[in-house]
Figure 1 (spheres, rainbow, N blue to C red):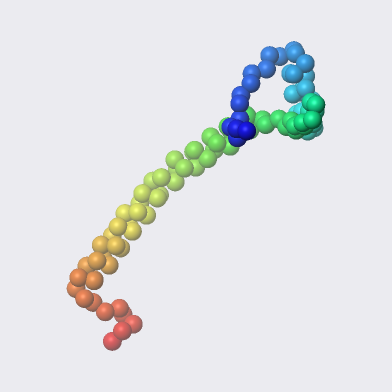
Figure 2: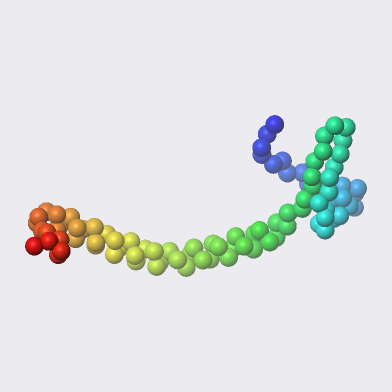
Length: 93
């Protein structure tokens, strides 16, 4: 059994479209012979709206993160210089 979701387009006005409308308010259990399946509706508009907000937050964070990486590069360079000069930590005599 595949774990990938298969997209099926439903034409408005049919019996399946009516079932999907009903599934907006409640979970449906679909039964056929010996198998059962649950049907729940996902609102794609809400998902995309949240995604757009996250993209904007990331775009705003990039300049701040870039600046902090330049500080980290300077700190690492200072650590290498101190190691090369064989300096002792401040707490050691």
